Length: 150
Figure 1 (cartoon, one colour):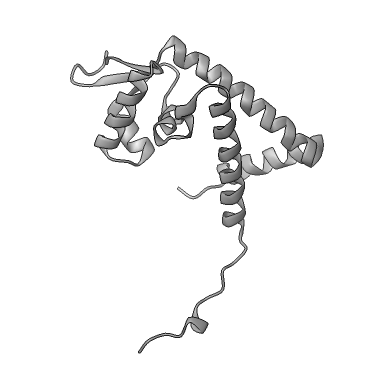
Figure 2 (figure 1 turned 180 degrees about the vertical axis):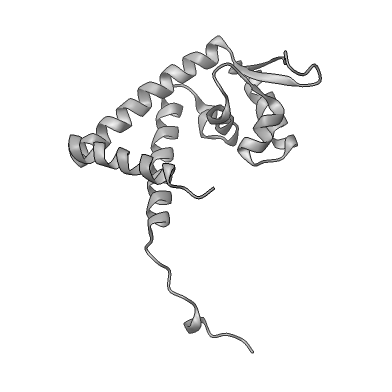
């Protein structure tokens, strides 16, 4: 029996949808500002590696798990970031068979630019929500994170 389209469930306006939309809007604004700041590669998939790197460096194998992508995708993204001078591969002091991906000096300067953009976006959010509203919003996000299911 074929189901009628009228039997489909409604699309709910739920908290997950609103969080996802807000996150997408933030990321689009952030990426556009980073591109405008002279980092054209920031709107590409490889830029997602940066959010998963520890400041002291991260074993490349850990990036596969953290990012939820294939080993080949991580390899390609890191290769491109190495070619751009944003990260470098270093010997892993804990495992001679693996490499640690770490920021270069140029990569650390990119993080400075990113922090400036993040502060600018945050100031705009404060202007929309007000100081108290923004503080509550941040507290609420922290509480939702802390209460997540394992």
